[in-house]
Image 1: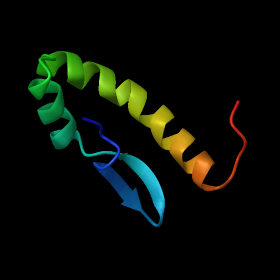
Image 2 (image 1 turned 90 degrees about the vertical axis):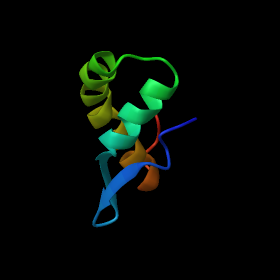
Image 3 (image 1 turned 135 degrees about the vertical axis):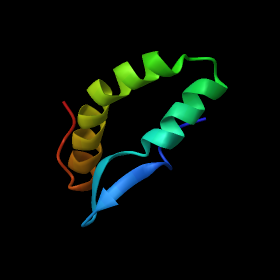
Image 4 (image 1 turned 180 degrees about the vertical axis):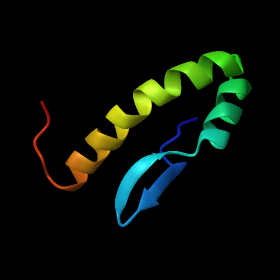
Length: 61
């Protein structure tokens, strides 16, 4: 299971994950909701930036 298909997009740019889906997926694999809720907002902006950089053809680090 991956969250790649559960993205929020605006004006052709990824702005984040669908957190309802992310919480449901975390629950499905046994991650407590409070852990998922604490970790995903920290990871989300990095994910969005990297996805958008890749879409624009910016080389990876």
